[in-house]
Length: 464
Ligand SMILES: Cc1cc2nc3c(=O)[nH]c(=O)nc-3n(C[C@H](O)[C@H](O)[C@H](O)COP(=O)(O)OP(=O)(O)OC[C@H]3O[C@@H](n4cnc5c(N)ncnc54)[C@H](O)[C@@H]3O)c2cc1C
Image (cartoon, rainbow, N blue to C red):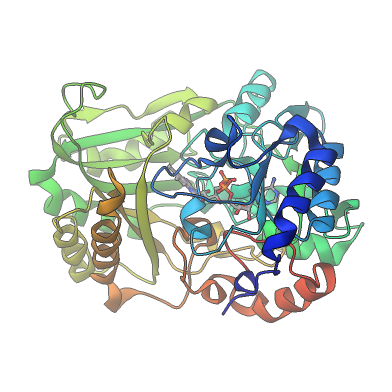
């Protein structure tokens, strides 16, 4: 049982008083069931998850967050911080009926210090916000594959980017966190201020408070050699084996992924993709054009139907993985692999044919992503050279069980090569063993949770 499961008890008769407490403190910034804004405010990015909180607060300032935390505490409610709901699947096992969902979606803004190569990012900001502000200074960040994921939710759970093998996890780029803790105070945590809390937040994330801003390091990268290669899925065996072989000697400057995708016949998709199954390699290679092209040669020799690899402005990297631009109902599962021998590649390709699997993905990790830097927090590296990820769509609620079974099978097909590790950001369902992702940090994280949040006020997608 995780600490998240120990819900604070709110007697039914007190519910009206709790609602009044929230309304008095937060006014129009709180949405209660029946309010016109409630349904919109409680709906997460992952539309497959129906969230039923006691109420939703939409703070616009750090002071609003302080007021919300204090009001929820007085009302006897728990608090679940959420920025976008990309990880709503991981929170889905937590009963929210006595919880204030604290949605940070209106607390957005980015200030870049070009000289220091850092950005101060407000709690609900998206990666697109950071890239837009950083690019004019020739800077970028360790963002993931989707521009509408939040910087805080991604970074404080690790964060695997297409720069990961060269620069490590995004969490190691976090310099300071401004957080409202369980006692309602606004605290700044960094290597020099509240170092224990700073250690815990870098992995423990929303289990330790509501983050109103973080400071992150930016990369002096204005453009990058990146893109994708695409073949018909009839080439999946050949291409997957070639990519696996290629990754064995690829330098740390290259971080790539391989996917087999079954795309539905949708008018929104370009005709060359609509209704087709394809195999795609994408990612970034931080080398000169000549060196990157030479490195790609064995993959290009397989004659891809589409080849977009080339030098592009750094913000364009966020588009190469073609993640859905809108909220999407989905179920996913992942595992870490220690190696990817030919038998594992065959198992991966076969698993892509499991009915219901929409996308079967391998990400090449290792390199700096597997190395713990000095001064890192609770999560600072992820073990394993590859991540396998299986994705299914959940078009209607009745499809949820079948989708969950499909992605379980998609990942179980590679059981023989799995290691005892998980990437925290990719945990997307309830019940996954978070202790595996926290590893050696688990015991200290639990101790710090009891010290900083003794009443277990905060409910997190990935509880400690
Ligand atoms: C389409 C898609 C693409 C993705 N691509 C990548 C990728 O390339 N690399 C990768 O590593 N991951 C990736 N992810 C996973 C993603 O990074 C995680 O799910 C991440 O936790 C989402 O953060 P969020 O804040 O947007 O989501 P939310 O569901 O809003 O938040 C997740 C959790 O983060 C915490 N949190 C968020 N904001 C705050 C805050 N302000 N204060 C306190 N706690 C907070 C809370 O505990 C919350 O439960 C992807 C997910 C999707 C759906």
